[in-house]
Image (cartoon, helix red, strand yellow):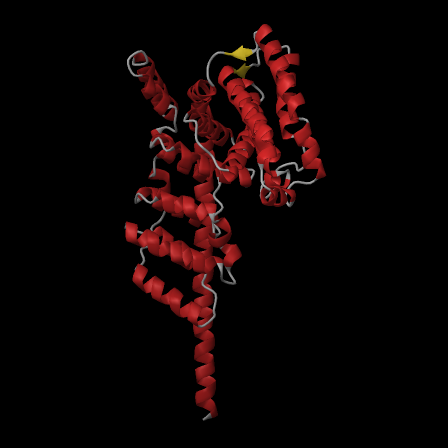
Length: 411
């Protein structure tokens, strides 16, 4: 079903390609079968009054007692408006800062993201994912995919890449569909030529580099090439400590050297692996910018020099001194790639769009099958928790009756 739907969409896109090329770009996304809510909504319902649940949680917290993960799950599942999404955020935060914080269920996280998407509050989902330490929101790959896809379909590639950054931080690029969607978002965001701060360059560079490691072809090596160059720029301007801080990255100096190493790998390869022309132009621009920065560094005031000295050590200075060598080496390698026909005329954006068209449909099938099994497992676990809750409540009531009976007998 999903495959036939995707085939029809791709066929339609091909027919209108010469008239509306932007349409084909936007259609390389998750199919309707993937984003359909039928499997999720087919779960057994557990209707709850959110006002009563909120009052119960407030009273429980006031008595310094733990709220159960099942109570939070019920609250999330019964969201019915935008306002209740905002209210739920508060209780997710409270639960994360409670003794039971480690027991937030995976299905609750999935339900939270789905509810945010349903009620037009995906920025709230992104906020809690970005502040995962405060909310405990660590989505699985399927949930990440839904959130990335929702931003891509809106043409908001910046926010889509913000989600990809969280995937990178969790080192969760092991699922093919997540790899494809992430590369798609990164490629289209780069095509907008964003003006980035240091933190943005570091995040984008790390996302491109780590996601690129999942693909051994032209796309993966191009992503690694640009990613290493961006990280190298951060390293040159702010020191190696500014690169790996908070990132799952190797902290040895030399990210520009690694970018050039990718060029050497492509040049030495025997296959049709190439680097895209726009990627070479982009990295050439980065090197030109660094060279200009280096030329103007002598004009800094004493105060600026002292400030930089606090973050730049001897290894950083040694790396900076290699910049002219890197520029020369880059030009030589580019000339070699061009002479060997290993420069792809198509853009990186075009390559990731083609990747989505060719491989996303097949990747969806495995995800959907696994998702159905996952939902069944979640339901089995939820039923078990409800049964345990009922048994514990009955035991507590029995103990209360026995205590009252003992007190009555003692009187």
